[in-house]
Length: 300
Image (cartoon, rainbow, N blue to C red; front, side, top):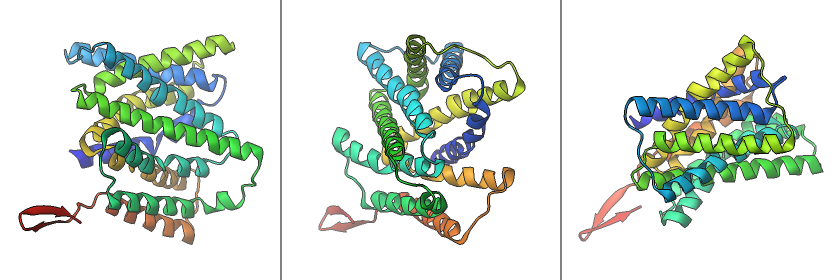
């Protein structure tokens, strides 16, 4: 079951970049994000109400959902999409993939979980692989103030994503399932971003064509309703650090789709990067060796 959820998350989030590109046009980016998560939240509420699976929450649960909505469905998307104006997608992908390491560190800080050496080694190897994959973008990217702004925003977005993972893990430890917390979190996130749009004077435009509506539908149902539910379920089952390795594999799916749809050419460094990422994946999911010493269990 975990493997199916993992592969589903990687395949969905590795292809949402196509829909995001199709969203660019008349509708402002923050408004598109509002549409996406408002609709996704409403769909989740409809599913939960019809199936009678909507869980009751106390004030603490709603406050955590509010924070989760701010981190996962509002600020991090604004950070990444704004950063994309100044730095290349490859740089953003590499920064976002540090979520594996941030999740391991945050799980240690917030939950006292031991940081497994294989997870750190796998995450580092995956980052090295991504660096090789996107080395042409790095080589042609001049350092400037805008570049530093973009990297800073990408890092802030990654930290928000990691914080959202921790909040979801807290909710699941309290017995609340991701579908319920996602429904509230998406609605809260969309509401907060709507207020920002109104205060900033950003118009709530709409493109009534198949390109925009089709891409919005893909981002709402597979990208948000299914993708976030699958991923955050993995966070609860596997732990935040292992689940976050999905972020290292997203660019691989995206590059393969790009090779088919846009003529992306694989190079020797890119293939070496692919091998490094897959090796990192094996390390992250390798079970620790256990040996018994005089009745005690020692994890090596």
